[in-house]
Image 1 (cartoon, rainbow, N blue to C red):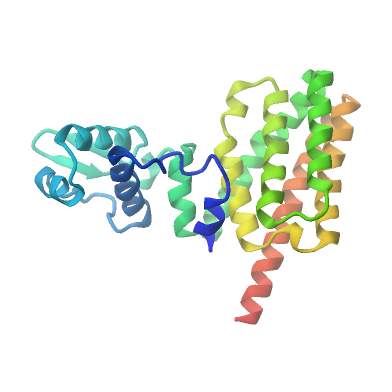
Image 2 (image 1 turned 90 degrees about the vertical axis):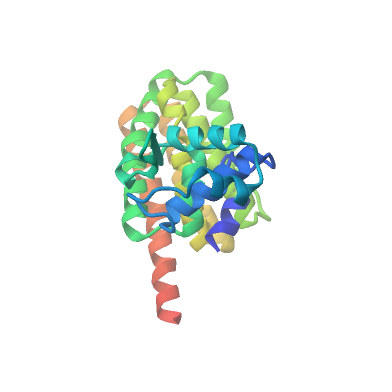
Length: 252
């Protein structure tokens, strides 16, 4: 299940703490993202929410502020706390993407993830080829070695893959690029929940080679080739996912 895959990748669900505040945010946020609390409706009255969650008024209000910061709700005097349309939601928020992934990504959302990865990670690879340090290049080579080792599970390969893409973001030297790690993780969760290259040694090696091409270009300071390599790796992941989806549909 998609939600099982999420539980295995670290940064997603930063709201999974056990505090009362985290619980209120998680439950209400999940209900909004799932559509059980649709855009335009008001959240239940404060008294009802206090009774439901058994928390203090201060805790509840802080939780609602957190949801507001994520673009999920808006609170106004004499109006109440209203669920905002999806166009207002902050999809760069890791917790938000975690809730969305828990409900399952539809085709449009998967396509949107691919588009933003192509735009951001393609540029990140370009910048790496120009800005990377010897130490960062060594880190990327280590990431490739980690991805290539035998005995991977779907979880461990996803973690190694994510580490590679995060290292690219760091080596780009652009802090904004580095901050979109949650989007990359969402894409990997979507992909590996459907099928992992670790399921087949040949597919794993194919995926590793696609990433190794990027590092070779970065080492050669070839920005165009680094960008092309990154776009190729993203396309390869999408192709594997679509193939797995087609196989599932055929079996069904």
